[in-house]
Image (cartoon, rainbow, N blue to C red):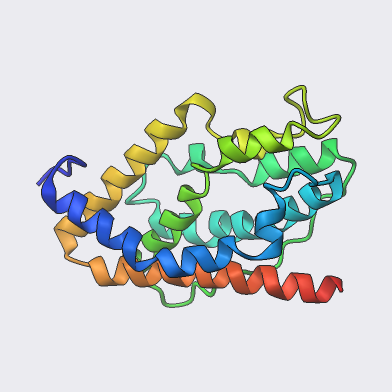
Length: 203
């Protein structure tokens, strides 16, 4: 059965996924470090700090999640963003960060892993909106140092849709809605815990 985002089954699943992860999503968004990236008072050091936090997330995903999904998501190479963060931090004169683990990927299933990637890929959607705020910082208003939040550029929508197609197709073939949702909630919670832990260590 070929997945189609217009099918009622696909829409029902995606709506359930969004609803079931809403609390974990909002909890992460309400962290001071998360809201700082949208603040009119954001400074360059706030931006760099956020990039370093997200570097940990993307490093972990590319090193440990992508290999598990190579047979299910066929454009993973195009979805790599770790190098974009490295470029941005270099432009800001920060050293390449040393990655800290975010997820425990031992003995996890493919649908659980897809749930994690759903969260990470979904973060690209807000990137263009966040970019507008970042570009108000002097020195970041000429398209340099903002590679990560520029992301897929005008392909952001099509990349998101192609991921959702692959996700819903896998779910319909394997009837694994609950496991995907668990993976997504786990991802939100792990990123939340990582942000909080790093913030405490900085203070």
